[in-house]
Amino acid sequence: MAKKQISLILKNIIYLIKDNYLKTAISQKIMERTFIFLVIGLSLVLAGCGQPKLATNQNQNITPPPPLASSQNISVTIQNFSFTPADIKVKVGDKVTWTNQDSVSHTVTAAGFDSGILNQGQSFSQTFNETGEFNYHCSPHQSMKGTVTVE
Image 1 (spheres, rainbow, N blue to C red):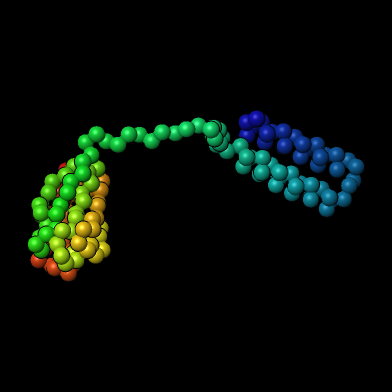
Image 2 (cartoon, rainbow, N blue to C red):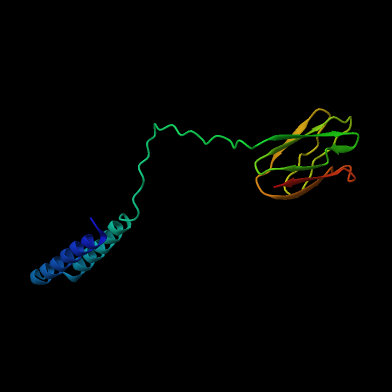
């Protein structure tokens, strides 16, 4: 039922109850309690008339969309205290993987990500989902720098 119809029905019920109570001279306290009960009931009914809930099929298999065809994996080598290549251009959605081939530990650190310490043979990957220029460096070796430009 629509809210308007429910409201009209409850108003009529309240009127009949009030009228009946007045005619039969039932105590004012009972009438007040009944009125409060009806107001609360009306509030609950109207609250239940909000937006309908969408039915869901629990047995439905949802397949995620396929990855973007243009996504690529780009590799950067860390060796001889440098990033090779140091400056790269990628597209939104591309993943860059840095691999430490040096005998000492390094990091790949930027404003939005940090690899933590990478020992020899370890890798760190970052997917770039926003355009912009991301300058990165190695925390223990501040002279090691690079840039990822996301277009």
